[in-house]
Length: 360
Image (cartoon, rainbow, N blue to C red; front, side, top):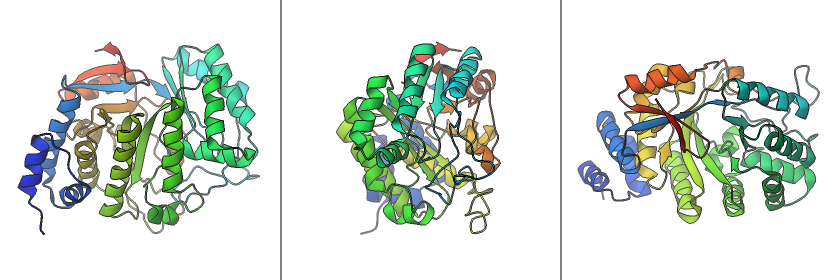
């Protein structure tokens, strides 16, 4: 039975939950301007004050050694490579202190899956960060990293999570989700944990007490059905645990990756905004959807706020993963404030829990 776009639009306006099938139809057939208007309705329901937030953060990467060898990643190096590195805990803490003194309130810490690194390394980072820089929030170690530590130590992921919690970690980034369909993961990251394991570890994190984010990296081989399955499974877990703080969709950057020959060009702005808007509409149990000036550029970053984004992410003082794919954009607090104001919204700096620190 064919669907009626007007009926789906009406359902959204009446703040009724749409189905995966309706979301798929919207993604394929919805008018791009209409999607923006509907995404704004969904945003206002959860964020009625027209406030758009950002965080002052840094994103050092503790190692580029990785045995997962994702085809979409330009950052990883095999053990023993000439440009492989692993930062000492002393070096990481020093970098964090510098970023804190430069205004960062959060450090987003992720790295490769390095078989040489044991749980004690991660626990020392957490304990020292909490002890030596208590006002800098550590947002660290995504689900695939947790699973990798579990594998190397031969202990359950629950035990890894509990150890990190006991050391003082409280939030976990949503990286490594890519697209949460096993068919797609086999194409772009066959050695990484599958979609079921990502969801399982994230659920365990929520049950332990952690708050996390959820991400989606698209613009490669995925089809519309993959996008919607990802959104459905994420929405279902949020219904169950309530542990997600925000949803962060971003696009594949092909430069210097193994996929560059097959996928040399990034997707266009229309596709990005379409997925962003449908994400905002479909994920009715997520307060925040993040727009990406970082992967899309600052002009598109401004437009995202009219397509459902209530957050613009961070300043990213240090970042190496996408820099290796020749994406070296950075921003300052003043630039993000200007970006938000020029789009007609009220800027606010937040912390990692999305609590407002300061309005501008």
